[in-house]
Each structure stands twice: as C-alpha cells, then as structure tokens.
Image (cartoon, rainbow, N blue to C red; front, side, top):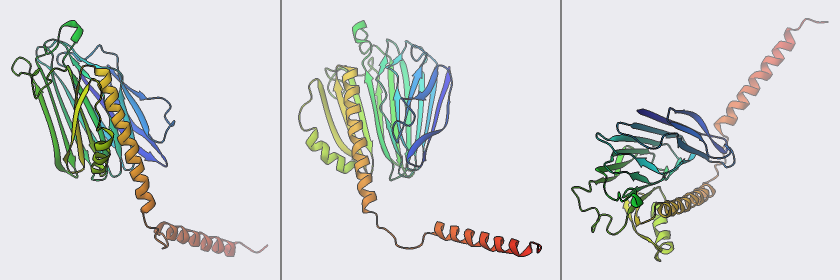
Length: 303
C-alpha cells in the first residue's frame, strides 16, 4: 500500500498554523492538543494499521516556511512485520529562513524477517533549526526475536543552502554482520540517534559538555560536533521508552536553547531610525485619497 502525509506550516502573526495538509489511509494527521495552545504548531501522525507490512511505501513531506515552528509527533512504536520483499519510508523535510522543526518519532521495532528501507532528506536554510531523532530496536525482545530481522537500512542527509553537510548511513543485516558486538549494539538492544542542526549548535555543544558530563543509568552515549552547525549524539540502551524519553529531553533542551538565542539576537538587532517604505506607501495612499475627496467635492452641483 502507498501512503502519503503532507504538512505545510506557515507563520501568521505570532502563531504557526497548518496552512495545508494531506493524508490517506491508514494514516491520519491531526493537531496534538489545542491548535493555538502555544505559538508553535504541534501535529501528530496516527495510524489505524497494526504496523508496516510487506510492500508498504510511506512518503512524508513536511514544509516549514519562514519563521514557522513545528513539533511533529508519532502515536506509537513503528512495528515492522515479517516480509519477503521489504517496505519503504521516504521523508523530505524543507526548512526555510528562521524556521524550526522538532521531529523525534517512536522507536522502530522490526519483527522476525522484516526488511525496511528509510531515506530522509532535509533541505534547510542556513539560519533554520532542525531537531531530529530516530531509534532502532533489536526486535521483539520478549518474543525471542532480537536481531532476527533481515535488514534495516536508514539513511539521513542534511543539505544546508543546497550543500550536503551530513550523511548518516546505517545498514543493519544481522545474518551478515556482528551487530551484537563492538561498534554495533554491543550488549544493548536499542540504538538512538539525535541530531541538532542549527546556527547555535556549537554553543549547544559547550552546554552539553557540562550538562551531560555525568553518567546516565542504563544509557551509554556520546556526542560530537559532526559538521558545520551540526551536533550529533548516538546512544545505546535496553529500553525503547527510556531512550525515547531521553531524546525528547534533549529535543526540548535544544528547542528552549534555540528560542533563547533567537530572543537575544532580536534584542541585539539595531533600530534603524528611517522612514520605512511601508509607511511611505501608506502616506502616498492617504494623499491620493485626500486629493480624490476634494475633487469630488468640487464636482458636486451647487445647492
């Protein structure tokens, strides 16, 4: 089955609104809470299907326009059922000037013999901000299906002003790779990736050097300044919900940090004491209306 989800978020005044959207079965796109409970837009992707089946193709297209801010959520774990040919998910995110996108979906859980290909392309302006995450599980652990899937291939590319700045390419094939050993999952069952791409990524790295200096129980992680204005963190754990909460904590931290830096930048912006072009246009319109009004009075016949 082929399914499509489209979101077009746009800034109107102090709010970000859903300008256009589209979805088809089995997916549904709806507001996450009240539409204007906050200045940014919050949407959630829901599904009536028990998971992704063999042959499924899902396309997610998100367009965040100038100065708009979007948080996109998912409903539950993404379950990948047994397959023979495989399923595909293609995501394209476009972030224009000054926009911000937060997208940390629930973990992907591949069942025995699952085959899944995910491609993610993010095109963003230099001053846009991306908060991105994904989590891959070893499978249904308590069903004795850990690492019994055939293949999970996830590729994420970030383009800033048309230039490729980061590629994260993960291809897991348990039957051909030692995925439970060193440099893979080691002794863990879940792997998480978190990306913060923003003009303030280097500053955020300095904050993380202090905030994340200690150890977290049941989670092993490391992070690096991976590319220009791009921070990447990789984490391992044995609990999908715990890792999901961890990434969302990082995401909210980055969200608030970005908002803070944006406010400082706005305060530092110089005030230009010149007559604005818009004001000049309004004056010209007023003058034209006054001339027309006087001309009309002169044309009126004498009483």
